[in-house]
Amino acid sequence: MSAVVFLLVCFLSCSVSEEQTVKSGDDVTLQCQGPEHEAITSLQWIRPDLKKKTEKYVFFFRDHKIFEDYQHPSFRGRVQLMDPQMKNGDVSVILKNVNTKDSGTYECRVSVNNKKSELMNIINLKVKDSGQTSGNTQTEGNLGLKVGLPVGIGILAAVVVGFVFYKRHKGRFDQRI
Image 1 (cartoon, rainbow, N blue to C red):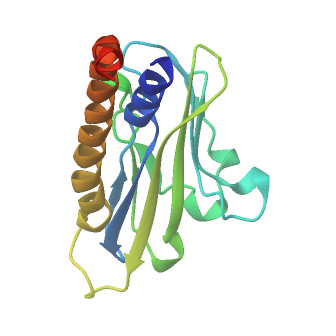
Image 2 (image 1 turned 180 degrees about the vertical axis):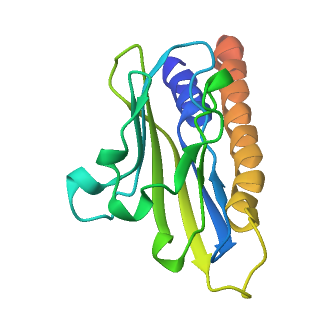
């Protein structure tokens, strides 16, 4: 039973991956939610596909300070916190004036109370040349999440209920056989 509860908790709390498509020249908000009632000591937005480890940062914040020197040169001066106070754990960033080279995977990692950073969100950003798409859309990646998440939760809930029902009535079934 504890394994089922663990799977349910992990399923509901694990990071979510989404896809965003924007046109070149637009600004895009990369959404990420950290813990609401804990002190965020470190925030890292990274592009794992960038070559040098020291230049994987899209945005780096630690101990109440933004470190632009740690950013990949192509992101300097183009990234800012959506909410500089990070109220309610909102650690989303705005990437300004995107271009096709900004297409890729973005990871949001948060550390609270100086503990090891945890992956909070993954965004696959696609930047199209101007005129091929309009604005900041999230329908492609979220459609599967909107359908799959409730279905998965429903199936998991049915398994848990079935297991509990079986355990409670196991003696009755054994007596009949």
